[in-house]
Length: 129
Image (cartoon, rainbow, N blue to C red; front, side):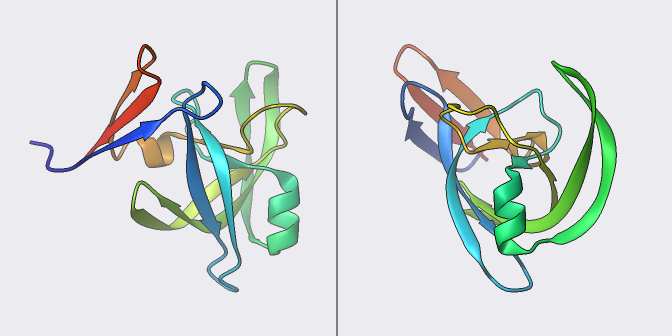
């Protein structure tokens, strides 16, 4: 049985949530809007963020996207979202297309910890755990 729930209003008519990306070594933190991406196995942040935070490289891998197979580097961070903190998360580093309303993609590495319902009619997200 789920014990807590949170309602979040859509931003710019999209299921975007604010997340904190924290470098464990320096405690530098960025707070950005992230799109809930249920098709992504990992959370994705932009290249500029990894560079500005001087994040610790954690490896790389090939991944399949809608555009084909790409090589993606991973960095270790902590993520604040939905009132929780996830430490030691390996996030992918990839620049989203210019003009995209989200800065990052929140992937299933975090989303699978919750039961999430997108209510498009009422433009809100229900997050339960």
